[in-house]
Image 1: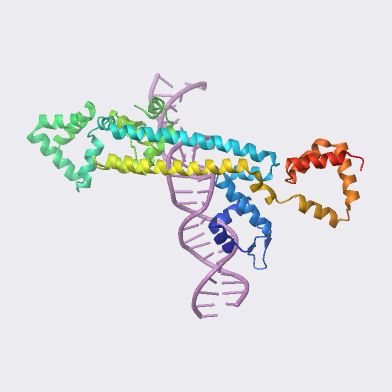
Image 2: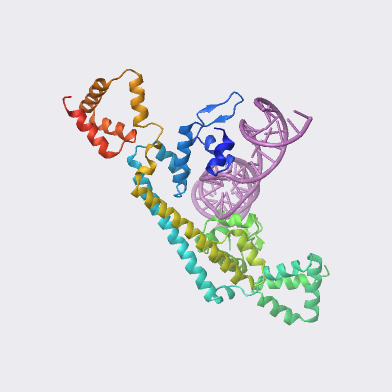
Length: 174
Length: 174
DNA sequence: TTGCTCCTCACGTCACGTGAGGTGGC
DNA sequence: TTGCTCCTCACGTCACGTGAGGTGGC
């Protein structure tokens, strides 16, 4: 059977089969005259087994090892895999718990930075401000209300040194 | 603060920070004369937030979007992420169930093996072995290398009970 | 000739990790 | 000079997906 037909029959993609061939996990036993891959019944059986193991979440490396190993390995590998899946679920549980906590106490996220420099400049840029416009805006602010400018920059939790720098830049002609 | 110190303080690697810089998720606000990255307090705060979201399992793309979005987005994103985590856990549950099923019924995996008992005896018979010769061969194998005999029978994916039977038979005089 | 299937590269993905080769400050 | 930290590429990982450019059989 050829690659396209096999892919359809097993509900996987051709590129998956091409990949399995490349890494040596499943090489078709034969090639046609025109160099088409020919999968035998034994190849198909091997693919079924690969699919089955794949559904347990094993990596292709695990599966390759398992398929060359004596049979006693199977149960052992499955147990190892069971452990890994359990670990993964545990860590996803941690994620769930964190999300719920954050949803319950949005303050955890809020005062990390209610409004900061990055967010602010992002807003201005999104509104169409370019560097030139930004400079004009700061210059105006600094000229008409220097104290409020200072307070505003503090409000953005910008470090003092940077504030000084920004205000100096706001006083220059360009 | 410089990249190495920041990495240590946050328990992440330098290369992570280099990566965040490259993709534009967290660019240090400044560079020293010698071109060293200088992270400001605001950068550190942003990193904390990124770490927090990262622990919910969001992708860096999600996080970048969230950090530029208006604050109302946060709850929505967290809900979406909660759904994704739940889905992921469901699919891991499927994996668990499959593994348990396979551990319970190893027959599901049995005769898929490329070399099995039927194929092997077929080969021997094709080579002219009859029952008598087969018995002699097994007896010899069992007498001279019992452990290898066991391994070989396992290699043919023969169930354990049958292996025991064959080896007992191999130890009899006839 | 047209459609369909097949072929072989080669490059992209995601979130980093790992060198390689070089520079700057004490 | 020695050690430490930093820099910028470039390539590797995992399990494929997606073209690009070309061939074979009806």
